[in-house]
Image (cartoon, rainbow, N blue to C red; front, side, top):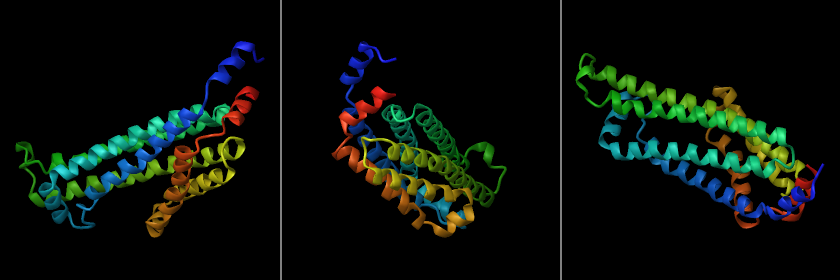
Length: 239
């Protein structure tokens, strides 16, 4: 039962600042992800020697890519918490489930960053590594980068479920346009193609377009428009 004190707290708690903050952090996801892209160009597919040479010649850029990837994960975790709070009035259980999928995806991608950093250790020229041939170390370094890619893509599967649930919550909400929910569900379906890596590899990079379209549209809406405060309060009161 809603008490007068509860109703007063709901009325005072405007979601608009939180929605705009979520938009800012969502934008940071795109920016930090983009900041890591130049370091990916150091990897030459199927050529361990060329990849090792590029990494050692541009070590600061490679380390910057690692930092950007970690920051990207941290920012996504912030967005997850903000969205959980924002969509809890629509359906608390589904909002919590969405947050679970997102945090698992973040955890997987954070762990994957260890694989990304591993080539610097393997190629670092430490004394204990001299028992291996140079070609062997280069091959191991490339193997770690491939493991990073596979683990990262596994995280995208969990983000696919996350986007589907957020899209559904938007459709059920009254404080955001339904088209944003449809676009987010479209983005989720795109990320779910990574359940079958050969299909995702065949469709890449086009498979990323739904994610950019759906998540980008939601980001811009939150930054510019925020949410309909009155309708959010109505749903919060009903919940």
